Length: 341
Length: 286
Image 1: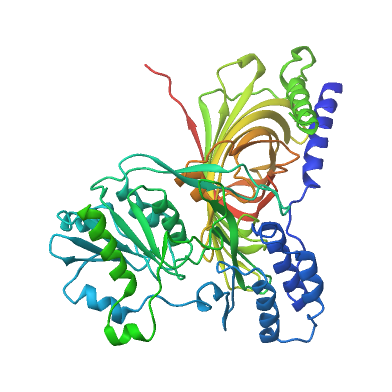
Image 2: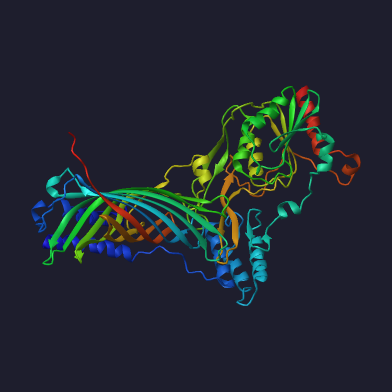
């Protein structure tokens, strides 16, 4: 029986060790202090810009933990947590509850709007075409095309973009307007940009958190822009931007800036270069935060936005009197000049 | 290879070695084995139970709910290495779980499929005076599994994919007994993965980065009991019910766990299953 005993001994030891091994959640309770600690820890371990922004997250803990009491109601707790998150100064950071959404929108609220639909209508008129989420028209016959993309949340196909570009096939230049496009799906942003190159172009890098430490990052991974299927527009393009160009649109602007025929005009973009992740607190509130930074080809952060090649603002209130959009007018003029040359 | 991983691999090889290498030390079977490779026992069971899901890629919270399962098991003596009297078991399991977090404000859906092949060697087979028999079998196996957990609230990280393959170790204990001239089979099976390879995203890597941008290098990890302490335990009772039909009632405690790249995951389930046992005789070719 020695053989049997030996075998049973080894199997017994093995299975017994497994029975004692447990991978379980940390024991968070649903109290104001526990929810505060859970949120602080999520940001501490997963948020990607603490070092870049020079935020002392331990100090933030000291300041805000002193404001947490067992008797505070959920509204007071939400406001306290919201204030704590606002120290990150990040439009991708939100806390969602049934009664409110905490947000940081100073990246555009503190700056000129620089986009007004009333003024845009002067140029777009009423008989413009719509291909999925893309509105387009020709500003002057056989001269300058105008294409407006209001969001990258609503999908469009390569065919949609190709049809729009085909419609403008006799135009000498294109005004591509992404003002007040606050982002959406990166795939759609890239899909649009891919119609403006006929060769692979390096456009930047992406990183991710490789561990829980504030500076634990993967090596930057190179991201290229590949030509799309369909029509490629290689003639001059003026890309209009404002402070509300955020997230996927910020990345779109970065991609377009790497292309030789593109000039960006308007205001600095809003930033938001951290690909967001989601998590949650013990009380069920959801939290969104930046997790993976995206960098430009020089490996510079884009979190606080991208400057245009030419800075132009819409003068207010004069613009409402003249019904002229100074950015579109400027784009029109330089495209005419470029194409006449 | 980490020292801990080597140690586990050593335990595995020694254990399997005891089963298969030292023929001279083979225990003599007291019960004459009358089954051949043509005798197949098959059981398809359906079950329901409690599920507990946890995956820090999606959330630091536990999710608890209900699991629905299908399990198909084939077991029969093998033809190859016949002097060792080996028994092979193939086991397919499919699960769907629906679980809520403690605040009941969010939901996970989980799908999981798993296939196993285990080769048992009979270490002990003994008949008691009352005619009841006890059989102890141990052996190694292979498993492949795939599945995902889908978190309904998450934006860019809604899914955690589970794909992997492992070498297994398994023990099966069977007790045939009779009560009022009716025969029963009480069985206990415990199986655990030893060494394997599993899909393992980096700590904060998005699926967009891995699969849309193509940064998919080094997204697998070697697993061993130190980072995958998983255990499958199956208690079953086979009993005849009517006109020679045999019913199997099972309780399964299935613990799947990994701790890879600082991402912690568990899927614990307790499920009760019921199925009919079919015994076939594979006819020879004429």
